[in-house]
Image (cartoon, rainbow, N blue to C red):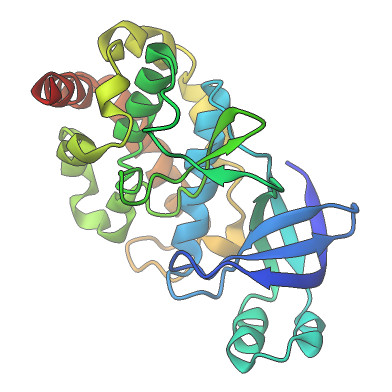
Length: 258
């Protein structure tokens, strides 16, 4: 993954608990920046990174994810005291995604994705326990007439309670019933094996290995970043092995929509 440095705060994006913002970076680009110091803390960035890179591995359309270095002095040019505090609390390594200028929010009434793509996205969100792809908040953008997945900070909510994570990984994801693309996902069972084979153990290890040690802190369940990282690897690998539970639940939920 690339690392860029934030140069200029352009505009806040008030949606979402991580208080994202569009910032200009030293590669002459702009990114949507998620701040490590926001209320949700590093776990939102961990979920964003792991889920986002899983989506990319599966061939799903997602903007490039980048590490963004943020200097404390960056706050000096920002007049809003709240944003100044957020920047200071986020000094160091943060996470961003490529900004898609002119992109519009997805509207299922205006655009219906093909069944294969919808089914893959539903499978992915069930695997990562992503609660935030609903009709109310689809977290899908349309850019140049192509669908893009964004904002996975609410995925993998098991990591807010590691004591029950082992049990959680074997459970179906019942909230898939609220997925905005579920009505179009007629091939969930058919895409299952093709997607699972794209996530061998080594690929899960590679993706989780991208998480910086500096984010793997302040979790009482683990005594080191290595142990913390391994817990994500173990969870995701095991969830794939018992994926029949979430696949069957997604198929059942789709059938209930008919």
